[in-house]
Length: 75
Image (cartoon, rainbow, N blue to C red):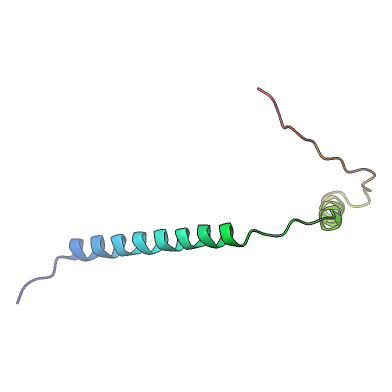
Protein backbone atom coordinates (compact mmCIF):
# COMPACT_ATOMS: atom_id res chain seq x y z
CA UNK A 1 0.00 0.00 0.00
CA UNK A 2 1.15 3.48 -0.80
CA UNK A 3 1.51 5.85 2.10
CA UNK A 4 -0.54 9.05 1.81
CA UNK A 5 1.48 12.20 2.40
CA UNK A 6 -0.28 14.45 4.91
CA UNK A 7 1.49 17.52 3.57
CA UNK A 8 0.08 16.95 0.07
CA UNK A 9 -3.42 16.50 1.46
CA UNK A 10 -3.19 19.73 3.44
CA UNK A 11 -1.80 21.61 0.45
CA UNK A 12 -4.62 20.33 -1.77
CA UNK A 13 -7.22 21.33 0.82
CA UNK A 14 -5.68 24.80 1.10
CA UNK A 15 -5.70 25.28 -2.67
CA UNK A 16 -9.31 24.10 -2.95
CA UNK A 17 -10.45 26.49 -0.19
CA UNK A 18 -8.52 29.36 -1.78
CA UNK A 19 -10.12 28.69 -5.18
CA UNK A 20 -13.58 28.39 -3.63
CA UNK A 21 -13.23 31.66 -1.73
CA UNK A 22 -11.98 33.38 -4.88
CA UNK A 23 -15.00 32.16 -6.84
CA UNK A 24 -17.33 33.36 -4.08
CA UNK A 25 -15.61 36.76 -3.99
CA UNK A 26 -16.03 37.14 -7.74
CA UNK A 27 -19.68 36.12 -7.47
CA UNK A 28 -20.26 38.72 -4.74
CA UNK A 29 -18.54 41.41 -6.82
CA UNK A 30 -20.70 40.49 -9.82
CA UNK A 31 -23.90 40.52 -7.78
CA UNK A 32 -23.13 43.88 -6.18
CA UNK A 33 -22.30 45.31 -9.61
CA UNK A 34 -25.55 44.03 -11.11
CA UNK A 35 -27.76 44.92 -8.14
CA UNK A 36 -26.35 47.97 -6.30
CA UNK A 37 -27.98 48.89 -2.99
CA UNK A 38 -30.68 51.55 -3.25
CA UNK A 39 -29.80 55.09 -2.28
CA UNK A 40 -31.79 56.29 0.70
CA UNK A 41 -33.49 59.61 0.09
CA UNK A 42 -33.82 60.57 3.74
CA UNK A 43 -31.33 60.42 6.55
CA UNK A 44 -33.97 59.51 9.12
CA UNK A 45 -32.36 56.18 9.93
CA UNK A 46 -28.96 57.84 10.28
CA UNK A 47 -30.39 60.50 12.61
CA UNK A 48 -32.01 57.82 14.80
CA UNK A 49 -28.73 55.86 14.89
CA UNK A 50 -26.78 58.97 15.91
CA UNK A 51 -29.31 59.88 18.60
CA UNK A 52 -29.27 56.33 19.96
CA UNK A 53 -25.47 56.22 20.04
CA UNK A 54 -25.23 59.58 21.81
CA UNK A 55 -27.89 58.69 24.38
CA UNK A 56 -26.16 55.36 25.03
CA UNK A 57 -22.72 56.90 25.51
CA UNK A 58 -23.87 60.04 27.30
CA UNK A 59 -27.17 59.52 29.18
CA UNK A 60 -29.22 62.69 29.30
CA UNK A 61 -27.42 64.28 26.33
CA UNK A 62 -29.37 65.72 23.43
CA UNK A 63 -28.37 66.06 19.78
CA UNK A 64 -29.20 69.55 18.58
CA UNK A 65 -27.71 69.58 15.09
CA UNK A 66 -26.27 67.04 12.66
CA UNK A 67 -24.01 68.28 9.87
CA UNK A 68 -22.23 66.38 7.14
CA UNK A 69 -18.54 67.14 6.69
CA UNK A 70 -17.60 66.91 3.03
CA UNK A 71 -14.17 66.68 1.46
CA UNK A 72 -12.41 65.05 4.37
CA UNK A 73 -9.03 66.00 5.71
CA UNK A 74 -6.52 67.50 3.30
CA UNK A 75 -2.85 66.61 3.57
